[in-house]
Amino acid sequence: MSEAQSVEPRPLGRAELPLAGLSAAAAFSALFLVPFFGVVGVPLAAVPAVRMAHRRGLAAGFAVCGLAGAIIFGLGWAADGLGAGLALAFGAIGVTALPAASVGFLRVGAEPSRCYAGLCVAGCALLAAGYVASLGGAGASLSGEVSATFERLIPAAVESYKHSGADADSVARLQQAFEQARQFATACLFGMLAALWVLGGAVAFYLGAALARPGATADAARFEALRVPAAGAGLFVAAGAAFGLLGGEGRRAAANVLLPLLALYFVGGLSIICHFFRRWFRVRLLRVGMYVLVSYFPLNLGVALLGLFDWYVDFRRRGEGVREKS
Image 1 (cartoon, rainbow, N blue to C red):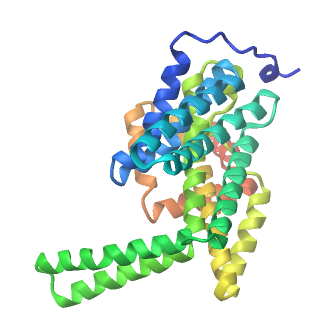
Image 2 (cartoon, one colour; image 1 turned 135 degrees about the vertical axis):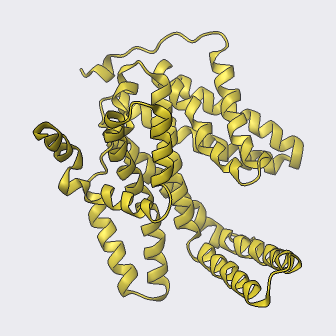
């Protein structure tokens, strides 16, 4: 029996479960309360459940998910009716339960990187099912709603830009940029949502483990040790070839596959950088600043390439070898 399997759940404190549920619900609610930046609350909503699953067992983690869903249901019902409350509750349970479930595989001895990869695949599969269901539903599809939102917002934004004193050429360029953004968001909506899930899943999976330490499963799930399975490289190459060679719907489908893969390899590359930054920079604030820096374009593309080629080069091992020689 592995060390992860032998860990017994610790007894719950009296207020620990309610506080975790309230924290998860508050983080999820930020999506609707804070413009734009509130989306950060979605992956953070799963952190209390993941932490609880590490420290107190999988049942406690799922209890946090249920409590958060109940709170969100009550708020949504009070604000917009029963239908909205149910939809929000299912959303809250979905984004918190999947990361918590990944801890269950850790507890039976699964490799942490594969648990995170499985979390990414499971979330993307659910997103794909929801996306396809929206296409076949009676109402407007998700991509149609996004396109309609752009069509409502673009004229107001362009008019505001005109009133600010911008010349005609600048206004035309802005309108063209908005139109390109609308077309991209409509065509690649699933890929964008899947990429956000991959990034958010990394936050939930690894931050939840970090806050749960010390503990066998939490100690095993370290971000700097993440390695993307080698099979992902083959899928990336196939999707890239399809994107370059195909047209129409084939090219669109390939783009929707490439976006979450790019996000996955960015996370993988960032974990390599984290591995070395922890050794080179002892000041945490400096490390955070460096992480923010490499997240900007075009450095983020270099980080993604770092993650893509790690299966072949093994940068961590080579870096340690160079350090030993020096």
